[in-house]
Image (cartoon, rainbow, N blue to C red; front, side):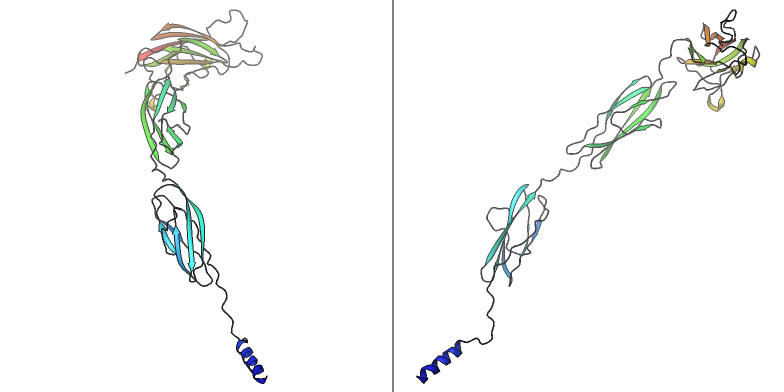
Length: 345
């Protein structure tokens, strides 16, 4: 009986805890990676960030979802030769044979074609000095024209696709028009054309009243300078004058009622204030500006004029509208002007 008890104690002692901690149970690794941005026909780098309670001992990559291993290293490179969407799988193993697989989707976009610069071009039509421009510029897809920059050659510009522009000319004049187009990727092209702009055709020869002034248009047949001579003065309104509108802009007879019969002058306004040159086919404009009545005088009526003669000699009889309703009014003798076209040297 003692022997049996002793044996039991010995066996119990042999099976009791000796103070050591058994190793933890092995767990499977965790597969992990991030999908990088990738471009067709360019090597794409993948990096495993997988973990394990001990260590990951094996990696198996399938980059195109065909079920076949494409690489067996932690970090690997793969080149996609076609665009599309692919399943990327990474399977990792530990030393005791446990494994885990992670699958993510990657999209490979087609290669963007090289940008082709735009091609600038335009057409135009002109009605005398008023011109309309139409861009015919093009750009290859996927590019598009983003901006238009016009230089009309006279200091004016525009930034719209199809602009209009009015030129100021007194004779047919050439202008260099430039269109610069820029596409959505910054590429540019330039088109330059020389256009000829002509002044509007002259109006009918004669005189027209507008408000308080009268314009008389004279047809100029040959290149000429113009001489004006007062041959009659019978006016009393304050500030009446005879002037020449631009491009000459000459103030020929100011306070004309105080001038003397026989006074004469050339029309100036040329280079260096020389005599203004009227080109063949142009018109000379002679303007009479009505004055104001003094105290106690009736309000003037509308001014008017009568034109006689033809190139190179005319006579203009101005009626200033003073003393409306009086005896003999209108008499068209308030200012009488002789106009002579002198052949230009």
